[in-house]
Length: 281
Image (cartoon, rainbow, N blue to C red):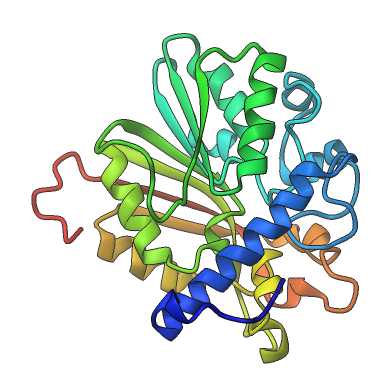
């Protein structure tokens, strides 16, 4: 990726966000178009094992993995948000950063024919791959849209549940992303997110590298910062639970640095109030 910046990109913050998004798009476009299953040996957001082997360690059951056609599970997550979401038949689910669609297809099974699942991803190659997987899975209640999670192509108050798997850390504008999530959720809607949180400061040499952000290494926020962002947006009953056992696979994400010293997988949940009249969002 060229480091030369377009002078029309605006402020330094805007340029940084643009650089981060470009790095993320490039990384996941390469993964989407790779011929092998999984994400190879690049490190970050996966462990380099075949996708099914990695997914077992993330919390997916054998039945879940076998229920989705080959090609949707790229082994890129850090948890199982569909299990966390406790989905009900008839609900509308939105997956932020849906990739090749694995979590969307699991969600579609849970919500049934009367439910609906929308996946949003900013990488065109991933959206194309996910759309190809719709027919393979016979998932008539799933659709995939191209868009940024900070600017969701979804109408106001139309979603019951938002899920996401190791994607929030990639966003350069997390507060804006949470405001968008709040906007599209129905009153009483909920978040069920698996992501990584920062437990110690990442070395500056790593943190300042856009490629490390794209690899889920240095874009993570602390638990306190995430709680503050969610509360400021208007979410209630927020809970963030780090998963210490994730050190086993996070420690394998990089060949030169033990990332489990700096980040850990966590579950993130919250609810939009039944009435958001008094919300700050």
